[in-house]
Length: 277
Image (tube, rainbow, N blue to C red; front, side):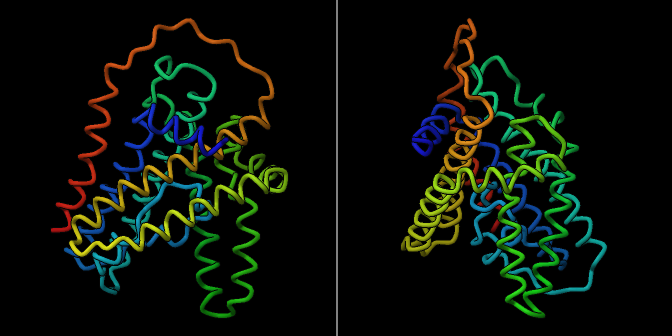
């Protein structure tokens, strides 16, 4: 039910899918700049603790770029900070919009005004996530069993950004509540995670030989599926926090922007594919 609801809202609200698409294009641009100036860019797609509930960044982007190893730590640090800020702003807009869509008509809210409201707290979460990811990465080089244990523990806190937005609470309160909600919704979360994993495995099996076409399809499909699954998680948690039905707002709905928004969403990955040239 939650997955079906996620698919429905992703199709019905194309603004949602445009957020991860834009983020992917920006990350691709940063990756191209990293190759041009010969510096490393931290691979956040390998360290996000809230996979599969986070914004999807296709691994193929980084494999195609083949960023060389270097010692340009200043440029690497600048790129890392930029990615944290971009990711935090996008995630604030992403989850904040989903909360609004769950609570009332979408055209009563501005997604541009949502992001600043959660931005500071989302940056705090991203920094904590980054530091924990670095520790896990270090442990994999030293003693991998402890690294696996750390990853399992970290998963218990993967719902933190969603609780932060849904309850409009502090980062520390969201961290404290995350393990409880993970255990309470273990069945639903497991189903969503397995569904995401199966779909992503099927995507990797696509017989794509042209790297531009591979980038386009992988970015579009993973952003669509990822958004649907994230909304499914938000819907699941929303029912835990709000067990009552909100009254419908008397607002005249408009679908005038529906076709052009989907056209833009379908064209955005082409920009990223062209950047790889």
